[in-house]
Length: 284
Ligand SMILES: [Zn+2]
Ligand SMILES: [Zn+2]
Image (cartoon, rainbow, N blue to C red; front, side, top):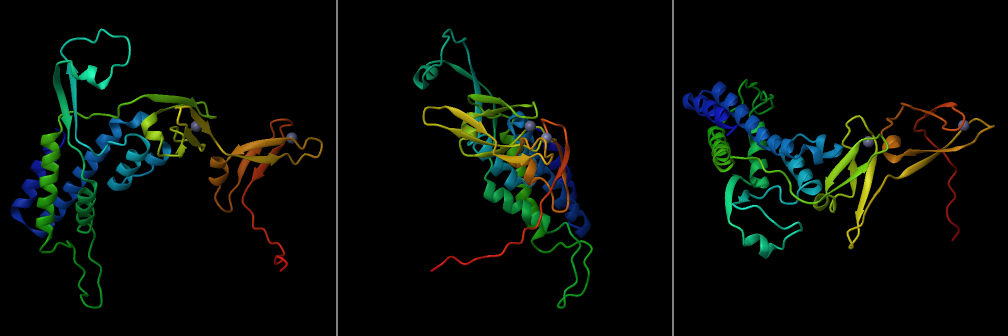
């Protein structure tokens, strides 16, 4: 599949065994491992919230996808289609589904995340110039050692397995739910995925709103964004306006968020301040 060019490049670089070539082979292998994870991200991208999109390392990314999109994201999957069309206009039971004859369309390898991450991290250690230390003051341009080749071969084995066991990317399945964020963007999520992820960031990367979602035992879904009250400083107005937690917590120390009153239009700046108060110990 998409990994063949990485595999041939790694094999070519491994042949000579020179320190520089091993470093480049480690880099290619690491890029291939990232590519495997990013292809999984790509197939699920419309259901991925802003918090997950901020992650780029394989382990946090896959963990986040597993929590928020697809609980089965690390499992191998097979996709099949029935030879005859389904005549029923209703959801079938598992037994009814199994009575149809199927043809396999494709399959995708799962990810053993612990092993995958361990190889990814070891490869990373060969991609930095070795710093001098009191015991070895020499600065090493290519910081390879006796184990580098072995690690790259281990990574190559993993990459080949993915290449052979995946002939189609399979995205998450399941019933979806949608809601419109305060910014106007419609967020669509797979219900199975949101059950374990109580706080989600809007899919619009420019938007700061965060949402809490609850699914009741009856299946009712509720989206909420915690609000903060902002009282207008115009003495003739004093209206209570609202901002979301997402907006307020995004304000950095020393910076201000501009806000105009919804009733009178007075412009304001909102920022974090240091508060000093006299403390009185509780009476014993
Ligand atoms: Zn939004
Ligand atoms: Zn006002």
